Amino acid sequence: MNDERSATPQQSVRWVTLGFQRALLRSIHGNMKIAPLTVADGEMRVRMEAWDRRDDAGVRHPCEVLLSVGGDAMIFDDALLTDLGRSAYERVLCEADSIRERLLDALAKTRSAALANVSPDDIASRVELRAVSIMRVARDGIAYVGYVFDCDWDREHGAGVMTHGERVVEAGAGDTGILSWIAKRDGGSSIANDAPKPAKKSAKKAPKR
Image (cartoon, rainbow, N blue to C red):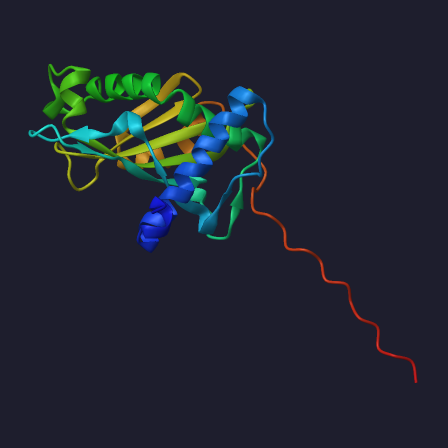
C-alpha cells in the first residue's frame, strides 16, 4: 500500500513537505522549473536530516523543524518566497551539513558560563533544532537566516544563531535567531513583503434601465 495513503493526516503533511524538498533539490541540480514555494500561514514543517538524533539504543529520531518567513516580522497570511527567500531556502537544504558544523561551532563559542571548554561535538548532544526563519532582511543579494534551538543550559530561553550566507552573524539566546534588528545592525536592509496580493475584483456596473 502507498505510504502516503496509509499515513495519518499529520504524516501526510510531512510527506508532502518531503516531496517538495526532493522536487526542489531536483530543480536545483537538474535545472527543472517547479511551482514557487508558498509557506501557509507564514510557516510550515520541514525535514532536516542533518539534525537527526540517535538515542542510546541507536534508534534514529527524524528532525522536523518549523520553517517561517520573516522572524519577528512574520506574517500570518500565505507567504510566497521571493527569489532571495527561495535561494536562502535552497541553501538551508543543500548545505545543511556544513551549516550544522558552523552553527555548533558558534554555539560552543558563546559566552555562557555553562559552555566553558566545550567542543562542537559536545554541543551537538545538548541542543535540538526547533525552527528556521528566512528573514525579510538581506545584504548583497543574500537573505539572512536564523536558527532557534532547545538547549539544556537554558531551557527557558533556548539558543539561537543568525546567519548570512556562510557567515555566522551572532549566536546567543533563542531570540537571536528571529530578531530583524540583528540582521540590520550587520548591514542588512528590509526586503519587499513576500505576501501574495489578492486579485482585484472588477466592479460590476449596474444594468442600465
